Image (cartoon, rainbow over all chains, first blue to last red; front, side, top):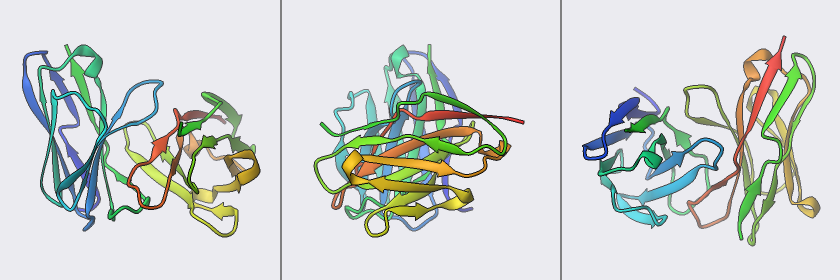
Length: 114
Length: 113
């Protein structure tokens, strides 16, 4: 398998549920990202990990909890979400190390919060 | 404040017509500029990027973009659009020594046969 793979592709959850999004990259990259894509809004950077260390938390509410166990895997743990958190969550990877290089995106996880 | 503006939310063109998508940026440092494309149900794919040098850059799928520092613009062009180019296009800006890219709100391109 190549590229960036995200699971699940679609997720529906209630406000009291706990779920996780998973991202895996097979590109040998050192940086991984979570972005939120909502209709009619710019992509919002949520978190950045470089060499498994979190280097960016863009004022994301604590109901979103990232985890990066190694350079190839990234998780986004979700709990007590709000309906306004419904969006497409995109994972991306890059060579990293502070270079604004090309981002490779997964296909996204479409989240609906009821 | 750092920002990227794509003034056209939606553009419709006929197949075979030329295309120009506008992008303006506001960025304090020397900008690194990108265009990404997103097809329905897909993630974003890089079309082209500008770091330095020749201000006219060529990308994949026959796209090109021109960096104009005096106008703070990085417009995307294609001489002849194909139906498969229908997608959403995002302009983004970043800088050296940062992982952070700032994206515009996107332009949705519709292509009529």
